Image 1 (cartoon, one colour):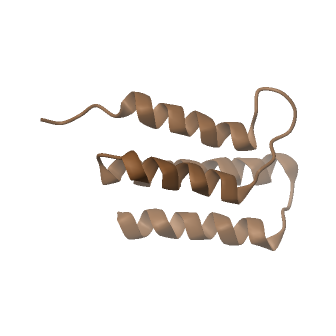
Image 2 (cartoon, one colour; image 1 turned 60 degrees about the vertical axis):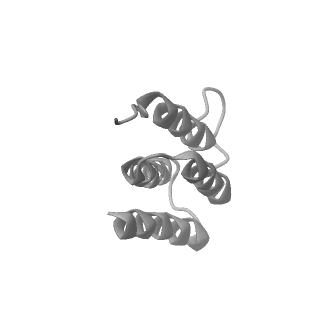
Length: 91
């Protein structure tokens, strides 16, 4: 019997989005915070595909943040590519 994880994944996506694009003000864009959100989710996840989805969503948010606010520090891009690599390994 398969479990529907859509609601939980959506909640974690909102947490990631809030780090980069909060409803008010500018996002903090702390890569460590968004990475921890995914690692916390991984502890409770049922399907590996959901973890992949969050890694890819984090990559998307980081790219959108970079496009919206301009060039970032090298560490930001290193974290972005590291997260994308995690998704690729899981896939």
